Amino acid sequence: MVARQARTQQRACALELVNGHPMSQETTPSERRYIFVAQVTMPASHHAIFEELYENEHVPNLMKVPGVKSCSRFKMEWAICEMAEYLTIYEVDHPDVPKSEAWREAANKGGWGEKVRPFYTLRQHGMYSSTGPTVLSESTRPTTT
Figure 1 (cartoon, one colour):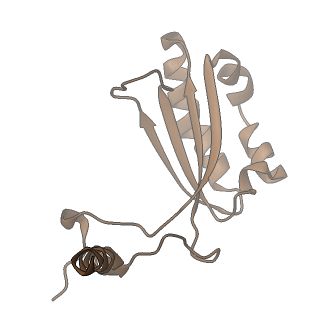
Figure 2: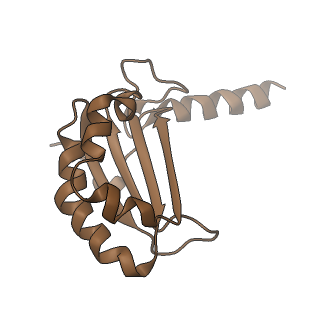
C-alpha cells in the first residue's frame, strides 16, 4: 500500500511541471483563452471565390472587430470521418465577441453573404475555452542561455 501511494505521489509530482510551467486542471477566468471555430464545406466550383473573399474581405473585416486577437485558416488534408473542408480559428478576448453587433456587421460586409454563404453544404460554429496551459514541444520551446 505504501509503495502504491509513493508511485501515485511521484506521478502527481511529475505532472506538476510541463515545459517548466506549473500544470493545473483548470485555469482562472483571467488566464482563460477563447477560440471561436468556423467550419464550412462547399462545392469545388465555389472554392476560388471563397478563398478570394475570405482572404481579402471577410478576415480583414472581422480582424477589425474589438476583441478579435488573431485568425488562423486551414484546409482539410485528410480525416478519419466526415468533417468540414475548411476550418478557421479566431482567438478572441471573450466568448461573446462573435455574438456582438460589430461581429455581425463585419461578417455581412462585402460579397460574402451573397457569393459564398448560400453555397455552404456544411456550416458549423463553436466557442471553446482553454482548460489548461499551452504546452510546447521540445522543438518550439525558447532556448535559455
